[in-house]
Length: 169
Image 1: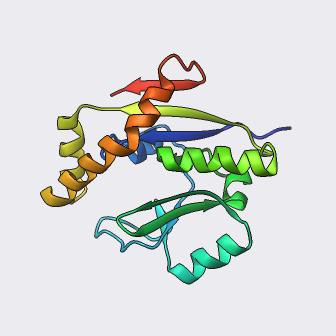
Image 2 (image 1 turned 180 degrees about the vertical axis):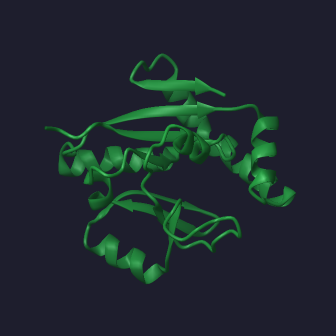
């Protein structure tokens, strides 16, 4: 029996991606990251907080299937994480989606199918959500600016693309 398709959940900062996974009881792949842990985070839940040596090991072993860099911090998932059936979803950004598609181009289709779901929310909702998780106003401002740039091309690509589901919250 083939595993269910992985849900690639894409959304700007503060759209409620983790919250949606919790509400739907989806087991999300915890991304590896080199950034410091927030006070509200738990090691291994949303992220696996690690170092550049771990990233280099995964990269050199060609295990990195999705990758992005934000504020000089790396975020990634491995092909092993993606293929395991215990995970239902992966929270990802547009760069990570590009990386997966490039990975498939080089290595062929992945063993596990995936569906892309784009979660959208108003800027006010996003600010409220980011404040709830403890982000400073400066960090929120930086994220909003970054997301405006990072999602511009993605939003143009999804216009008329019926293979990507869009959910407005």
